[in-house]
Amino acid sequence: MTPTTAPLPAPPPAPVPATRRGLLLGGAGLGLLLVGCSSGADTSATRGGSLSPASTAAPGGAQETTDDADRVGEAREALAAAATLVMAAQRSVPALRDVLAPLLALHEAHAEALGQPLDLPRAARRAAPADPLLALVRDREEQLRVRLADLSVAVDSGALARLLASMSAGLAQRLAVLPTTAPGASPGAGRGSGGRGRS
Amino acid sequence: MTPREALQDALAAEHAAVWVHGLLGAQTSRPADPALAARLDEAYTAHRDRRDRLTGLLVADGAEPVAALPAYEVPGDLATAAGVTGAALALERGCAAVWATVVESTAGERRRLAVEVLTETAVRVLDFRGTPEMFPGTSSTRTAVGPGQEP
Image (cartoon, rainbow over all chains, first blue to last red; front, top):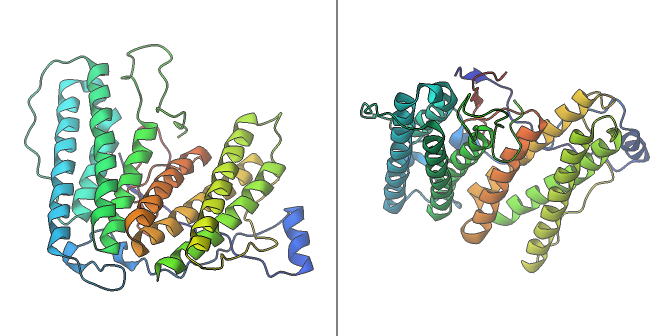
């Protein structure tokens, strides 16, 4: 997996002034340009990656609470547990190494954003059937996704909530393109659980 | 940004999304590209439902929901499937950013709604040839690229 740089997320479409010309252009759909209308939101809290819990602010400007620090700890623990399983699956089934590499990279990036890189124990290599192991990984990852979403709702800090929600959404994207069967395990194995495996 | 302002921004984005997806659907040949047409239909319906739900929330709060505008500007060459797909992708990414701001600006059940919508929108990005990102809806530009995927 190679992290790359992609364009900044585009803001939603800009409203065209309510003129007759705007209406005509919109109806024709020719040569139109999405120039964006800013939400006016300051997204600087999550800009640039790492978000220190101590630097986050709640809606209305309040600083993060001790409870938030505890919840960040919970998120880190959940991330580490999921990443440990992913790493163990990679070591146990070589065919899953490439399949799961993006998932592990995602966990590493998320852990860094929470202020502490993953430090995983070297997993033991055990022979295991690929498909059940992949199903177990998928199940645990879904649990992690839900946990991150719940933590996002629970924290006081708005910026921290945004980060956790974004992590949950990123995991949902990754799960959507994760194969349901190991490579070569069965003919015609489709990618993704929701038919969103276009890549 | 107050919760109400964030919700109004989200409503404005959903108005635009409904309009734009309607336009993109009209520009898409169903016989020639039924899969793209179906994805656009699905997106249109999702944004329409979200718009209606947001409108109800704001009315319940005693606010006057922001109105849709007559037309919106759309990028690219909409005469091609690639242009339509690119416009839909930009739209969904923009909506994800708006909903991430709603997450940041709200609390409780409103925030839960925003988290759910952010996730749905992030996954819909994949329908329009988007690739998984590390932090959907944020200004972080890191994109996760898996085997066989193009950035």
